[in-house]
Length: 242
Image (cartoon, rainbow, N blue to C red; front, side, top):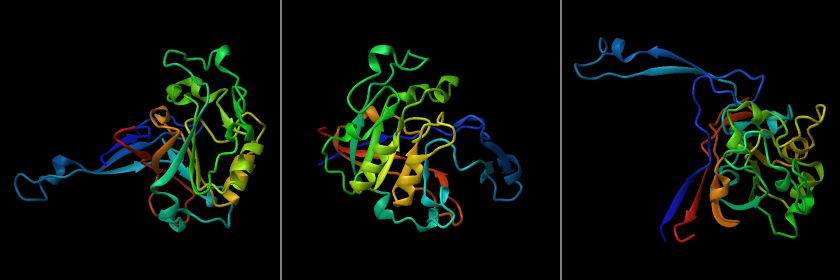
């Protein structure tokens, strides 16, 4: 059966602000095409560039090392926990493309979701063992705007605890952070999930294009030792008939 590929990553550009307060990426040429012409045969040219970038740029994955000094870094992650994971997509009232100030009041409440916090009730009795649990809030429509940083949806402590108990492989969200960044510094979702070896992917996009079940999710970072977070090219595959 044929498959379609769904891109779930934001594009990284020079100067991109992913998370307020963190440095934006800077691109610097190491070898320009013009200079390379003096080094190779006629008609042969190359460009080699340097990118100066914090790991928390664009759509990225957190490994346990991001939270814990003795946690596994990017070089230790098993591909079986990053690629072709069965995806379960939980959708919550989000924002329309023209709502630049966040969700409208009528979109802010349903079981397991109060407009910001996603609680354990949102997951019902679903079997989630080994799954990539993807939280689709629509907040990605604000990515790259000042509104993205304020009032963003997040996973609550009891929601994270339940996902640990259900033995999920990975949790992703199309929002600013898996935790509430306006909570005064507490980060229970990161703490619980990464302690359990559950990867976290933040700043996803286009999750609304996926079915509740049936997609396969992949988000593989480079194999970097001593590093906890890095951008990924996140994507899903879906049977063409879906």
